[in-house]
Length: 138
Image 1: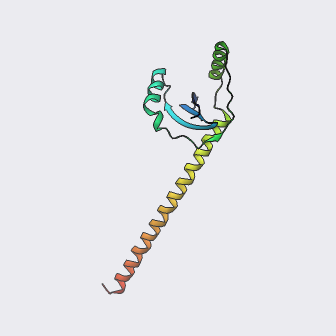
Image 2: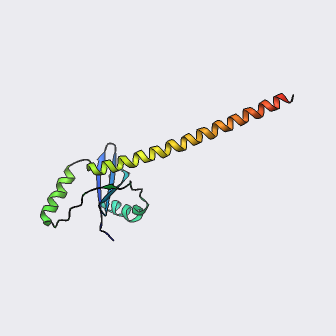
């Protein structure tokens, strides 16, 4: 069984606070996006992770390179501060989110097409029935 690592990035995307969950499993990156609304407190984020992590809809996996490094804790802390100053999310994450968005769009198209065809068939049957009733002289 491979190593799984997760990362949560919370940032302000006008007008809402957004959280991006990144999950790397066997060199494949999957991403899920959550809109929090108002700025979440640390305990609210922690509670959300505990309650809703397993119900998140992650995007399809995108291959990514995973580096295994042991880092100095001070260096790690500086990097965290730098990430907090920067806005936005990584390009791999954006690609994964875009891929998920495209898949959802295709699913919606298929569903709406089926609904339109079913409605058209129903209307056609209704017209045919009315035509038959008129023809019978009622």
